[in-house]
Image 1: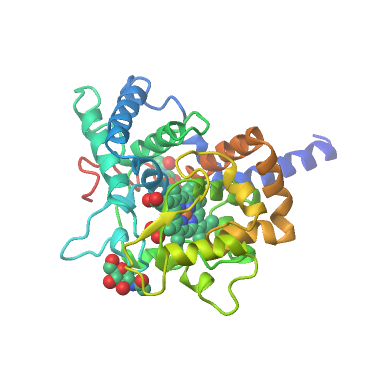
Image 2: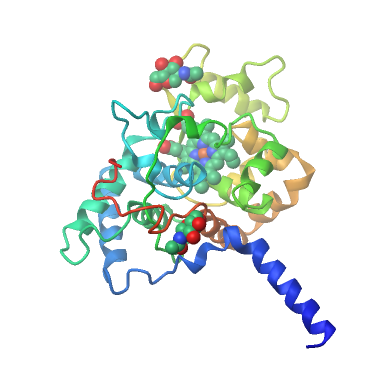
Length: 325
Ligand code: HEM
Ligand SMILES: *[C@@H]1O[C@H](CO)[C@@H](O)[C@H](O)[C@H]1NC(C)=O
Ligand SMILES: *[C@@H]1O[C@H](CO)[C@@H](O)[C@H](O)[C@H]1NC(C)=O
C-alpha cells in the first residue's frame, strides 16, 4: 500500500472516530419499527392531534419536554419518570423546571394508543414516542415536517441531581450557551436554530424579573417591550402568571422569533444575546429573512438533538409505563 493511501486511511479512521460519539445513527434509523409496529407514526400522530384539540399547550409543552429529556442523560425518556419514596426523579429537580403537565400527558396518551394495538404493545420506547410526538407538534404548530430517527431505548435511571448544570439558564450569554450545547454535540448554529422553539409557548414572570427590574433595565431590551413586560409581570406578581414568549405570533411555529430579536424583543437574555453578540447575529439575520433556511437548520438541529446520549438494549429497556423505571 502506498504512503498516500495509508495517510488517507488514517485520516478517514480519525474522522470517523471523531464523529463517533454523535454519529449514533448507526443505532437509529427512520424505519426501525417498520416490521415491529408498521403503523406507529399514524397512531402517534392521531393521538397527538386528539390531545392538541383539547389544549394548545400540547405543542410547546411537548417540544420543551423533548429538549429537557435529551439534555439530561440523553434522549431516553428519563424526564418522564415519577419520583418514588427512594428516588427523587429529574422532573422534581430543584431547578424549577416548570415543565407543563400536558407534555407528559401527550406521551402517555400516545403510548396508550400504541399499546392498544396488539402487535405494538410494549415494543415501542417512550423515548421514541416522545421524539415522534415532538415532530408532530412542530408540524401542528405550522413548522416543518421531517423524518424521525428511531430505535432509542428508555433509560434505567432518573435522578434529580443529574439535572444540575445540564440545562441552559435564561440568564446565559453566548459562551455559556455554546459550551453547554457543544457538550451535547451541537454547534452554535444548531443552538440558534433550536432556540427558535421560543416562537411558541409561555414563560413564568419570575424568569425575567432580573431583566426588567434591574437598574438600568437591560439595555438590549426594546423600550416599549420592556414597559409592556413590566405591565404584564408587575413586581411580586403571582409566580404562576405566565406570558407569551413570542409577543407577535405565539401560537405559530415560525421565524418571527428571529425578527423579534432584531427589534430587541427577545424575552430572555439567552434569546436576545443571539442578536446582540456579533458572533451569532448573521445567523439570526439569515433565519429572520428566510423561513426555509430556518426550517432546514431546525430540522438538522433537532435531528442531532435526538441522537444525544441514545441508549441501546444493553443500557436501556422498553418501559411498559413511561413514568416508572
Ligand atoms: C437556548 C437556551 C434555552 C433557555 C435558556 C431556555 C429557557 C426557557 C425558559 C426559562 C422557559 C420558560 C419556562 C417557564 O417559565 O415555564 C422556556 C420555555 C420554553 N422553551 Fe426554552 N430554553 C432554551 C432552549 C430551548 C430549546 C432548545 C427548546 C426546544 C427545542 C426550548 C423550548 C421551549 C418551549 C417550547 C418553551 C415553552 C414551554 C411551554 O409553554 O410550556 N427551549 N425555555
Ligand atoms: C420553585 O417552585 C416552587 C413550587 O413550584 C416554589 O415554591 C419555589 O419558590 C420555586 N423556587 C424558585 C427559586 O423559584
Ligand atoms: C450500548 O451503548 C453503550 C454506551 O454508548 C456502548 O458502550 C455499548 O457498546 C452499546 N452496546 C451495544 C450492544 O450496542
